[in-house]
Length: 141
Image (cartoon, rainbow, N blue to C red; front, side):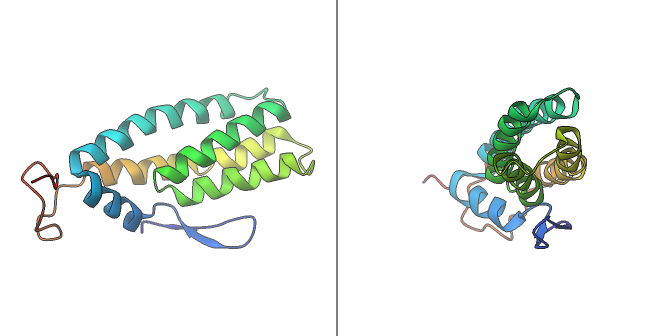
């Protein structure tokens, strides 16, 4: 795991859950995992850009934080997913007087999270970790 973040619930969680991504890679193959993550990064970056652009009202923040939480969680971006989930919960509980602050809390983790994921995508294959994989990283026989 790359780094740690303390959430609003005072729970430490990793920036990137590499164990989750390695399990995913083992099931669908290295190339498919990297393609899936790269495509997801584009969609996630768009949502983060929309959240950070300013001027979002509470319903916009609620929708974007919900989407960011789900997308980040599916890509192993645990801290970003948790922060977005925390922000979304505040909106739903009517405990969110400032949409800009909620957006800032989430977007503060975007850079480190996307950098960690990008580094994972770029890392070379380690054939010693995956002796059953075919040369293209898949497991189809």
